[in-house]
Each structure stands twice: as C-alpha cells, then as structure tokens.
Length: 314
Image 1: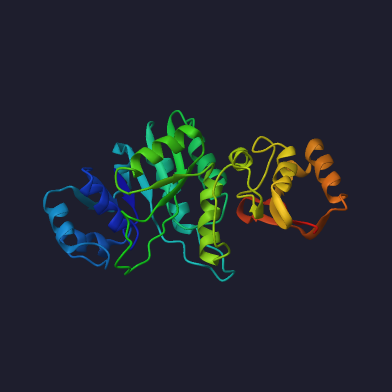
Image 2: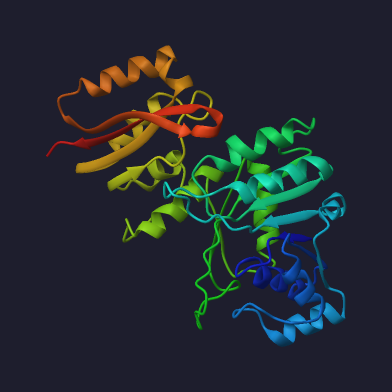
C-alpha cells in the first residue's frame, strides 16, 4: 500500500492503513518530512506519536521520496496539496507531478484513489487518459477512483476512521475495489455513481450549499419517488456519459420552483439528439432559464462547456 503526500491528510491515513494490517510506503517530495519520519518525529497534530513510533520501528510505515516504489504497490492513495491559485482555482501542479511519476512506474493490477481537493472532471479527464496511454485498460488492468478528503484538523471527535468516505470510480469495478479497500480503515464508505459526483460533493460541502444532500445516480433518484428542491448534475454531461432524455427526467423530479443545474461539453453541443432535446426544453413555457453560459471547462485541455440553470415555474 502506498500513500503519496504525507501532510495532514496523508500521514493519518497511512497510519490507519498500518493499524489495519497493511505495510505502507509513505511517499513525499519533501525531504524534511521524510527525514523527520525516519527519526520518528511527528509533525502532524492528528497523527498519534505512539502509533508513528511503532509503525516506523516495526517498518510497517516506510517513508521515502523514491517514486519507483510505485511499481511494487497494489494500491495507492494520492493526498498531495492543491492550494488555490490567483484565480481561486485549485493548483493541480502537485497532481500533475504525481501523474508523471505514475506514467513512469505504473504496473498492472493497481488501485489508485485520488483524495486531493480538485475540480470536477480531474480524475476522468486528466488522470485517466495519461494512464490509458500506457496501454492499460481501466476496470481491468487498473482501477481509478476519487474520494475527497474530509479531514478537519484538530477535531477531537472526528478523524480519518469515523468520518464517512464518499467514493466514486471510473467503472463499477473501480468503485467496488476502492470501497473494499477503504472499508478496512473507515466506519462507512458511501459509493456514488462516478468520480465527478465525488468531486462535486466536496465542493458543494465546502460552500455549504445544502442542508440535506442525497448522492445517487439518476435512476435511483427516480426509484426513491421524491421531489427535490434542486438537482445538480455532477460533472459535465457528454454523449456516452448520459442520454439526452436524462435532462427531462431530472426536471420531472423537481418541486415547483425547483432548480436544475447541469452542463454539456462541446461533444454534446454538437450532438443532434442533445441539440434537439435542449431546444425543446428551452422553449418550454413552464421553465425559467436562470443561467446559460458558455465558457472554459478545463483550460489546459482546451475543453469548453455550456452551463444551464433552469427553474420550474410555480
């Protein structure tokens, strides 16, 4: 087992895996952190001094800055920092650095879980293509998930083990593998339909935009038989990701004055079925158009998307 990034998220996570019986390689580019750990010096408030000392002495936690160890791992969690840049967006340079190392050392049959806070779409649109370029097939040769870190540093009541983990994989097999791993260290794992859902959950929670949040795929929401005040489509909708009719189905689940927020990428905006569906919806007199904006989705990949916010009239 490997944990990349040994800060306030990664080090306590590594110790939880040690407590569950794993031998953990803790990887960090910060030489000072690695040297301190080798000397059994703790620098994280939420990490137990005693647990750390025992883990190092028994070589159950092996700190290193050698990324080649990735080639020997069965699973790894990525917990590198993503500080906000001048534009108030997550700086994903640390994630990009890890991806470069993964490209160099990845071997088949590895589970990769990204925990770093980032924008919706990072796991699928940034990490996945780089790994598949190595000739590996997701869901078969490797498994890829996103599970947002939800650590509140210094909280005396909630830590890694008793804070529920939201997790979404690229495929059902990815989600199954990720859930099985994290169930060894946390009390509750909440699977969601995709990495985008998990990525959006973290951002929504940070903004405090909900009082009660139900995280599920559209089919399950329909089966519940509820009416909702708002539905937010996590991630960007594209052909193959969802059917055009899914937008109508989501609208049908809203209360009066309920709001639907979703976005379509360039592929959907050029798709005849999606075009016809959107034109019909926007012409519907029972629907208010609150927002309709076209802009950047992922700047580095030159991807754009159209964001819609619609409200059911009273």
